[in-house]
Structure formats: C-alpha cells, structure tokens
Amino acid sequence: MLPINRVIVSLVYYNSLLRDTLEYSTHRDKFDVNFYNYKKNGIVNEPLLNTPLKSFLDSNGEKGDELRKQILEYGETFYSDKSTVLRVDGDTIKVDHNQDVLLFEKTIPLHESINAVIRIHEKYAQDHNQVDEKIVKLLDADEKFYRSVVLFSLLNTIMRKFNEFNKEMRESHGEKGPAASFIEQELNTLVRMFFISKANATCKNSEYTDALDLVEHLIEMMNGKRELPKGKNFNDVFAEANAKVNEFLILSEDSWKLYYAPAVQEMIKDNQEARARAQEAQKKEENK
Image (cartoon, rainbow, N blue to C red; front, side, top):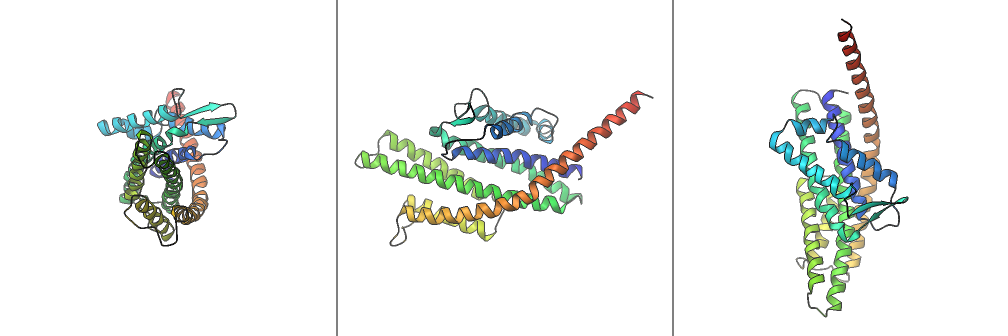
C-alpha cells in the first residue's frame, strides 16, 4: 500500500469512530464498554501521536489549529471524565439522552471536516497517479455507510422529538410553553444536521436517494410544507421511511465490511514494516 493510501485509510478509520459515536443516540438498555474504550482510544490519541491526522493538523497553520480544537473539544465532550453525555457504569455506558441532539450537533460537522481532509489526500493520489482501486471502493462504501447511519439515527431521533413536542402541546392545550419551545429548537437543530449531511453527500445511488427523499418528505410534513398522503398519519409515513432507511443501512454496512477490515489490516502491516525498516536504517547509521 502506497504511503498516501495508508494516510487515507488512517483518516477513514478515525471517521469511523466518529460515525459510531452516533450509536449512543439509540435508546437501548446496554452499550459495549470495550467498544466505547476502543473509540475513546482512537478519538483522543490520534491527534496526539505520530499519525497522519496529527501531521495534517501540525502542517496546516490556523486551519489545522481550528480542526485540532474541534477534535479535542469532541473528545472532552463525549470521551473524557468531564463528559456529562457518556460515562462508564460497570459493564455498560450510561447515556444522558436529554443530550441526544448534541451527539449530532458535534459529530456531523466534525465528520465532514475530516471528510474534507480525506478528499484532499484522495485528490493528491489522483493527481500523482497513485490511485488504488481498493481504496476507491473503500471510500465509496464508507461514504454510503456513513450516510445510512446518519439517516437512520437522525430519523429515529427526529420522530422521537416530534412525538415529545406533540405531547407537550396536547398537555398545554395548544399553548407553546418553554418545554415545547425547547423541543422545537432541538428539532430545528436536527433538521439542520440533516441538510448539512445532504449537502456534503457524494453518493447518488438510488438506495440512498430514495431513503433521503422519504426522510426529507417526512420533515416537510412535520413543518407543514407538505401534506400527509391521504389516509396516512405521521406514524405510517415514518414506518415507510424507516423501512427504506433500514434497507439502505443493511446493504451499505455489508459493503463497508467487505472493504474496511482488509484495508485497515494492510495499513497496519505496512506501517509495522515501515517502522522496522526505519529502525534498521537507524541502527546501521549508528554503527558506522
């Protein structure tokens, strides 16, 4: 694997940790502590150690400093002892679901920032005739899988918040009190994250666009910009969108697994061999 492609795989690895942080927006009973620690180790240490990400941050002046600040803030928000969102509790992770929206508000912009760095390196590989077909397929699969995870987690969180908003409005007899106004602001943030992801997406396959359209139509119905289909309520429309998103998620995850693990294993092997060669060269130099 050429050095530029090792850099790309390393950055894809980092973005996968950000993507997988969105799992904490799901309301389930238990989360794997080992997986949490795996993500924590990568997210916190990659910007500090001798990695391609640190190299990019160090060599890009103010732009690099801004991205480093964003990364360090992310680690502190979700993967530090100071986190009020996630904390280890015995053999599980306790999640403060009152802060679910923060998971999207922090993860999606940072993921897009790292994506931009990946594209810089991808263009370098193209311009210097160093394109590896395996990496091209990995990037395509990774893009689709990320968008499917975003759609799935956003859709379910939007619907949950929408139901909470309607419950507050019913209980206040149609008067929008502080609680309803707060939930409305959360919904606006989630919708904004949806459109940030949509604007940055590069995949155009029908599995993605069909799922995307159904989620966007549901959002428009919630905002009163589109009528509900005749004979259907919001739960019906949600069920249809959710089924399509799940279909896209399953297909894209299977494809991602096919390319991701081999690429990471090859990167690790090549990095180990490169370090061994460097150490051997250093020994020879010292023995002269």
